[in-house]
Image 1 (cartoon, rainbow, N blue to C red):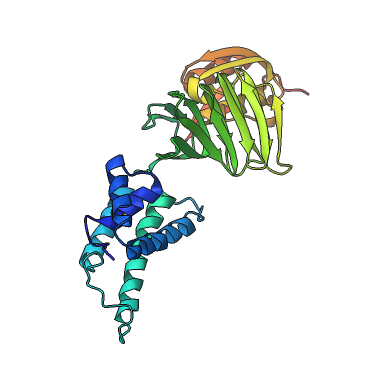
Image 2: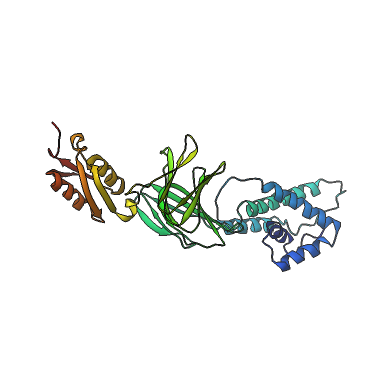
Length: 333
């Protein structure tokens, strides 16, 4: 069996994974025709490859580094150059050597089939609001306490993001590729768009709001809903149902710092501001029913609090990372 020439194990791995060039594929075919033993060896590796393909757990690693380590281990252990005695030899050496080779080849092929084309995963963890650019060119803006993990599946041409928290995506669309955001078993598939995903683990819902274009919002067991510009989709983690709603006016305020309040109760106003800014506003319960109509456009929090205080004749006291509003205001008797 001539499997010691021209790195045939590596060529077979690429051939089975669909990554071999025409020249490499032709070399494998020529090698197969040389002997029945070569064909049997190929069939063994194909079986290992197919079994490895049934493993679906998503893990992440540097494929180039892993590939080099495997090749080094194969070389150091002589897996490609060892002279094997005849199969009918009285000693058990052939079986031991074959087992060693099978283990290394299985590892090689498992890496290739489980993680085809995945290069270094990009992980972004944000405790504050932050913007970034994904490797394929799309823009992303993360809210506080958000984690994002990006990978590219080369064979499937799928850009995949796993999200915990909230993020706004402005997709660099390519009709030949697919961009998918995954959050706790549900998926948002881009159809050329800009959209926001809110998926905090402690929440009972996952929300998607489309600013431009369209997205598919679905799960493995539900075809889901199509959302267009200015549309909002909600997935209930308890009932596992998708519903459509109208987006709130300030849902993207964490990104834009643009707030619109129209006859809103002050309790809601403060809650919206606290969701976006690092400093927290403290408001006594009696003031929460006061009504406010105002627009804030990228002002800093100190300016915003001063406007609220002047509107209701309140005082502001700073205490650490808190701004405390005090006064009678519109307090009811």
